[in-house]
Structures are given as structure tokens and as C-alpha cells.
Length: 193
Image (cartoon, rainbow, N blue to C red):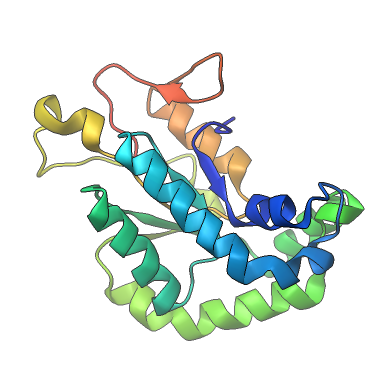
């Protein structure tokens, strides 16, 4: 998995709550402090030229702008990945989670509503990719305007892959990355974005 490079807003909430088994509903009150931690964690990874995958629901323009600013500060390109998972699949995946990790159908419904209202800027942005489940096997990501021999170590990517760790891991492995013992991924000559 991507444990070493995964920066999770939910984990930040749990750390603030000091209760790894607290329910998703119970940890929501820690969101403000959690995002302070989340942004600091991303900055720290980028300062060390480490891959940073931001796991948050960055649907709003403000959330997206915060992540873009952090990437700019770290001289890192940024790519947003939105996995366009059908509503019924999200509800089923949530129901399959352990009780403390379930968000509930009302939260999923709220996120789907936010995503619907955000489709305009998502379509206009040149660094946002909406990935449908049927496209995951065909997905190929390439960079054409960057000399990778010069800056491959400086390329970090932040994407919103909330709840789709398995799909993201599969894509990264298809791109040729090898999992290191500590959980991060490494590749000779490839850049993950």
C-alpha cells in the first residue's frame, strides 16, 4: 500500500481525538485542527522531495486552492484525481467498513451533492482527472513537457483519492513502481502522477 506517502485528513482527525477507534462522526469536530496538521504534513513531505498523496475530499475551490498553494511552495506539480465511483458502490463500500470507519449514507449523499456543484471547475481545470471505474484498467498517465532526467526526484503529486486506496495502488503498480519495505513506492525512470 501507499502508507508511507499517504497523507490522510481522517488520520489527522483520529490523532487529534487520541482515539484510533472513534467513529467518523465523533472525529468530525476535529476538522479545523486536523487540516492544520494535514497541510503541515504535506508541506513536510514536499520539502523533502517525497511523494505526497493527499487523501481528502478536496471538491471545493478553497480546498483545491490550499493544496495548490502547498504544491507551489514545494515547487511540485499537482494533479487531482477524482474517482467517479457510482453512489451505490460508495454506499456498499461504506457498509463493508468496520463500524468506526463508516461515514454513513447521509455523508456520502452530501459529498455527491458537493461534487455535482463542483463539476464546472473540475471540467475547466487542466490538472484534474475524473476517473471512472471502467477506465481504471486502461488508465495511463504520462508527462510530456518535463525532462524527467533532470527533475524526476522533484516531482510529487497530490490527488484526491478518498476511499480508493486499492484502485490507486493498482494504478501505481501498473506504472512500474515497486513497493519498498517501509511501504512507499520507488521506480527507476518512472514518475508517478
